[in-house]
Image 1: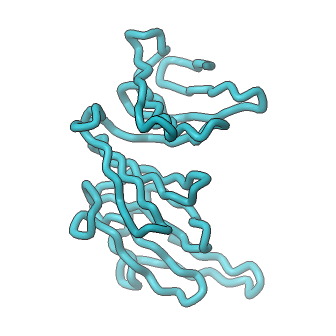
Image 2: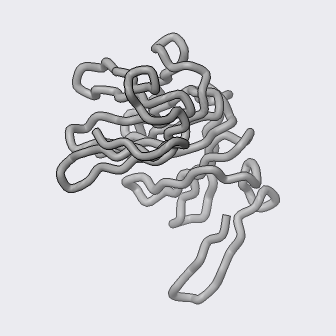
Length: 178
């Protein structure tokens, strides 16, 4: 991970020897306190405090479902959504210091999580290599969109919401708009 200081016009590399748990970052997100969360393959999460350059770690031993991570996103409640290669989704509530897990027990198949999108209504869309899960934050329920239900393609790695609150889904077979 390269940290660029634009004021000092300098570059600092954060590598395994310097505190990173693994040299394979797969996702980055900034939390509401200005910390940078770094997802890694087989190294869990690294949480970099930019004020003191200290790195904290969050991994399977500390409550994550796995250490092999793919994607990160922050929602409007300042929770960090964490996707994995095997389909688990963790939600770290920064304010409460808790982690909620979504896995096969909640209907998540062991599939690659490639993207997150929080929509206008606060629902979280989870793009996987086998469709989309839409988690309704208010109800705590979810629905699934997949190829058998009309979704064009299975590898849904791109999600964006436009100004009309329509969600666009980029897949391995084309583009869907909902």
